[in-house]
Image (cartoon, rainbow, N blue to C red; front, side, top):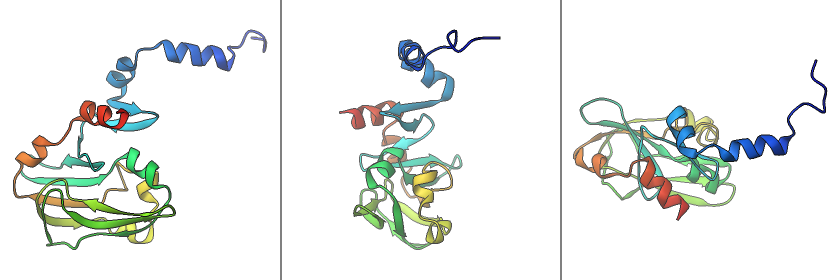
Length: 164
């Protein structure tokens, strides 16, 4: 039986973790971190801190806010989303996110037509804080110009943006 004196101290564990190169964590998990924030490798990112995930090989993408954005906002208490069928233009404000700290605009990272909205956010806006890359998604857009998606940042570029 190991005695308490033989168990690793927290400072030892921190030193071991610090010695592991970040690239190993990223390759193992498929997620980069920015000051403790998750940046999934399989998504594309906007400079306004929205993410996009391609849902099919054609033109539909799911949009949400990044972990970095939800942390900066604080506790989200209200979400105002565009309606299904609304035309949106990449870079334009299309909704609002209200938190205990402020009200922030949500921007469409791509142009197209809103195909779906996350109605769960009406009653549970905190999903944006709890699961920004999963249940906290905002809208789905049928893109009119898929090259806009391709022009968005990859995880490495977004990480560089948020670290800068």
